Image (cartoon, rainbow, N blue to C red; front, side, top):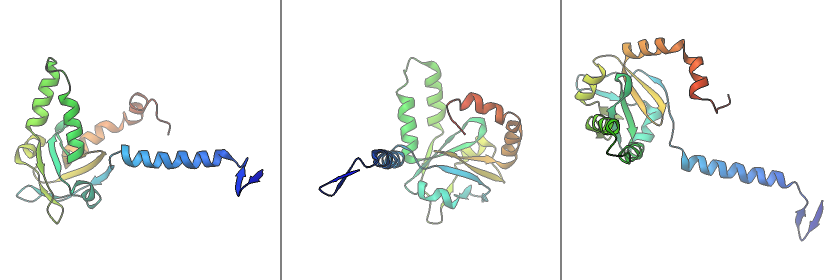
Length: 179
């Protein structure tokens, strides 16, 4: 290694490159990826349809959220910015595509925006509670960039039905991911 004017010439450039690559990765991940909503929670739902959002979700939803119909009869909760991103993608689909028009109608017609109160409570809209069969016991799950609200019995039934195929699904759903 040769030193010239206080610089190490010939020092391991890989280390500097690795540091720079790691720093770029960190910057990219914080810029490119939405915060992850993770976990399973069982908040109470009151007679007005209010639930208290899991504390780990609140910081990601304080700027506003959108409830929407989810697949398998659940209610989606999106951070406001994530919902707008998805809605924009759906709206860019050709109007001549009948399936896209139908999906857009069902998805957006059931969407309701809200802002949690100071205690982190939100009112799950009656139309969406009815759609998901939510009456008494609820389960809230984090699914990455969204959360889902399920009737607890329906969630347990769904989860039990998926357990057997869980490991088989990984090969089809995650072919490029190394675990």
